[in-house]
Image (cartoon, rainbow, N blue to C red):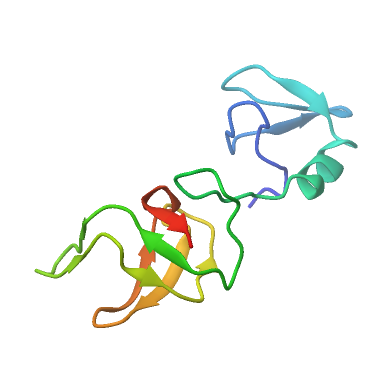
Length: 114
């Protein structure tokens, strides 16, 4: 598997090295191979709630929309407080435990920091 970083412009995983440059065959973007590791290290993922507040591990959030749970008849109601969240990478960026439901993943766009 390649250890080259993804394209910073289109996030394609098919980058290749051309001399001292890295190139993306999908969008044609070229960048310096020496600058690539520094740029990736500086870029920290910031997760924000529906209002724009920055979320951190351990925060308490409130659900702002009724959320149906796939494969179940349960619903997470508006106003449900979720304590001690953990931020993760992926489609659902919040891991948490909800009383009466259990462990689940939430999207940050459906919560508000309490």
